[in-house]
Image (tube, one colour):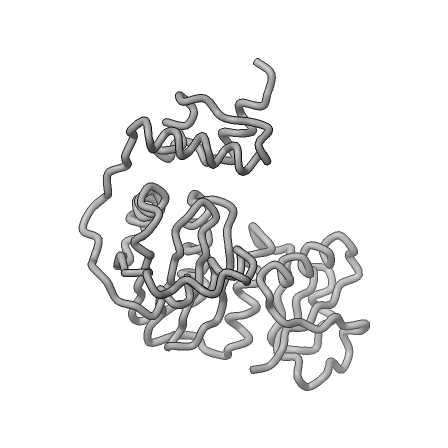
Length: 253
């Protein structure tokens, strides 16, 4: 497959594009000039103002969309050269920082990690929009039950089949960084089949579950802060993300 090119004189936009590509481990080439790009360049990410300078038919104005992430998704899709896939499988490794991967016709196109369970639905929506297919499956690992159920409940309105799969053998070697382990586990989950989700799932609100949310808040704040039980309950029910809860309680009343 060919490679993404990046060309823009907008330093701030260039920085955002490169940051997004590196975060998702997408190969790219920075171009000094838009004229006569190397043959290995299949799609160029640029700005709306510079779009007319790009000679390639396949180009994406990164500042023309709601987010850099969506622009990158679109560029990767254009790079594949396919307009419709037979089947896509989106794998999700549940947790406080979930991993997500997309397999299109059994080819791994992307694997990422998001900051919270609440961010999963946005990433899945982008994938569904950028990678149209005849069949679509969303597959999520069976572990981390609270986060798993929160994620599933947020995905049900998308009306795509959701399966819970046994993720026992999907966890990569521990020596890898957590963000890499989570996204690689998601890729393995995408290849498995499981039990179909039929309806929204209950969210456990026991004291033990609340204490777990409080513990995660301490971990995210490096031990400097613990959210209240009342706020932890709002996180459990999906009313707030954990990061939002921490920021909210940090503010002076």
